[in-house]
Amino acid sequence: MIKKLIALQLVFFIVFSASSQDVGYAREVLNKLAGKSFYGRGYVKYGDKKAADYLVSQFEKNGINPLDSTYFQDYNFSMNTFPGRMKVSIDGNKLQPGSDFVISSSASTIRGEYTLLFLPDDVDSHKKLNFFLEGKSVAGSFLVTNNQFREIYGKTVPGVLGFIVLTDNTPVWSVKDGAMVESTYWIKAMKDKIPQKASTIKLNIENEYILNYPTQNIIAYVEGKTRPDSFIVFSAHYDHLGMMGKRAWFPGANDNASGTAMLIDLARHYAQPGNQPDYSIVFMAFSGEEAGLQGSSYYAENPLFPLESIQLLINLDMVGSGSEGITIVNGKAYKGLFDEMVAINEKNNYLPEIKDRGEACNSDHCPFYQKGVKAVFIYTRGKEHMEYHTVNDVNDHFPFTAYDGLFKLLTTYVSQLN
Image (cartoon, rainbow, N blue to C red; front, side, top):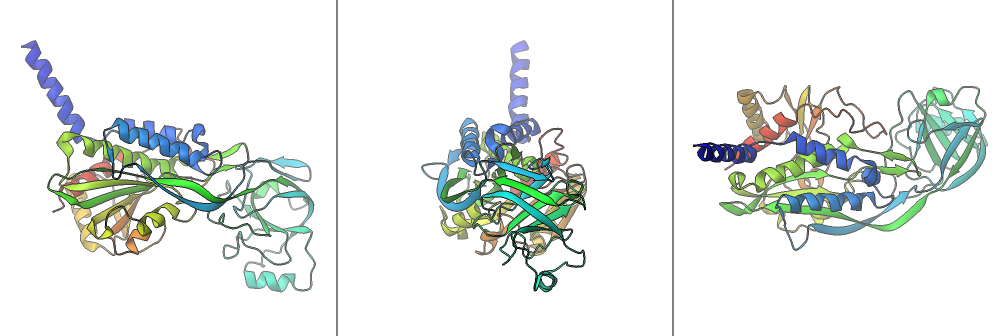
């Protein structure tokens, strides 16, 4: 009797394990990816390669095969990096990289002390800036401004050495301008670190431009039972911003260790015998997203199987919150898909709300969508984790509020595809 009871418990455990998500496992993956040993999963100390090797180990651990002879799809792109000195001081007061300031990814090496010139607040456009600078010599100065100048940020402005863009919040960094090195220097800094009476800035910053930086996408799959030559794709980018200097690193817990963790957990789920899908399911972990959708663009141009055989691609990017629900980018383009997910959610009450959104080339679904693949991008919404592209996007007390609900929505939807 005891042996039968143990056997029944074992069967229950196997069935339950095969049918459920594992947020504990997802947290384990997220904590590893957002840890300091991967250096922000960027281009200093090969952080992205270390993360890629870890992801492969997880695919292997869970019995998920590579789509080809290897999990790796190698490619390269050029990137400006900052592995060395990163020192900034205002009137002798040192600023902390990452928390007090960030620099444009297009910045070059610079050493010296320069004067500060505060721009009037009404100089708030490129046109007004050109008018203001007409007839003035500012070659040895950094211009301090409360305006963002988004249309020219990171670009060369003739005759201007540098800008300091002031912000009230922890400065947001990006590496999308890192394909080129520009001659004008751009810094975003906390407003309270640059007082109105400040007169000088001292810089000692080193860049290293890497031509053809080697990187890789990671591709794995679970073969379908009845339609092995038709594919559902789950994708997520595993890269982040990396390091800015020797000490400032950007963990990227939500962006996008969260989506990558769910990707790996989905692969683990479908690899279990009781969950083998009808369609083959491919799991694509892209690098280079932060540098401008490099990895997904490369794959879309160099697919390992015909793109026409992809029935649907679901891209997961920043899925760590969810108290307000989720948004489906391209939901307006695919109203049938959106309505079906809403119906599933209304029946099962998985998520607080599902919102649709139109087309947006803001994550790795885009290169596929542009090739005619049915592709959507899902992200969660909620104020419990609002950090984006800052040093504060950390894994400590990470919410994963809607993890279970989103996981169940995705697996339920896939199970109903025919």
